[in-house]
Length: 66
Image 1 (tube, helix red, strand yellow):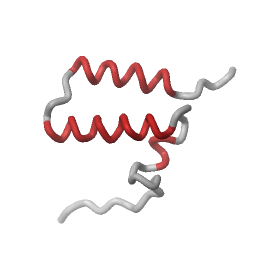
Image 2 (cartoon, rainbow, N blue to C red):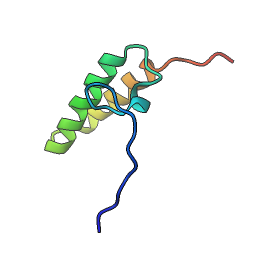
Image 3 (tube, rainbow, N blue to C red):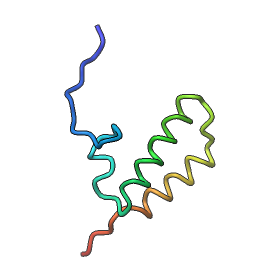
Image 4 (tube, helix red, strand yellow):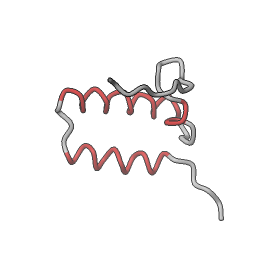
């Protein structure tokens, strides 16, 4: 039997809201998530691309003030 996951709120384009919540530019983040997902499913995502994506995502996040 396949696992069932509970439904989560999504943006208009189908990305879970939690994935784009803390970003400065939500549309750009959503586009990047979708393109990365497509590349991963095709098997064309390289290690270098993944490293660049990680850097971009951490730069995109809102920084908390301490």
